[in-house]
Length: 64
Image 1 (cartoon, one colour):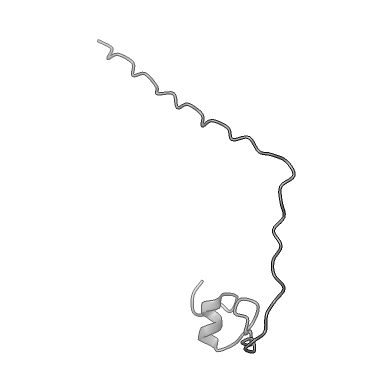
Image 2: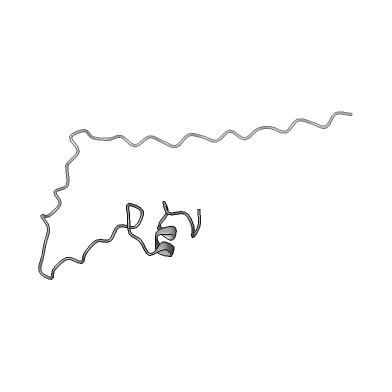
C-alpha cells in the first residue's frame, strides 16, 4: 500500500488524482453556518459497575 496503489490517499497524491480515498471538498463561504447539534438525553439511568478483582496466580513450589 504505497505510492502505486490507486486505492489509498497516498497513491492518489502520487497520481495527482482525486477519488473516494482523497475527496476534494470546496471551502465553505464565509458566514455560512450549519444547524446546531441537539444532544439526546438518556432516558435510562446507568449504574456504574465495580471493576473486576484481579486474581494473582500462586507459584508452585520447586520440585526436588
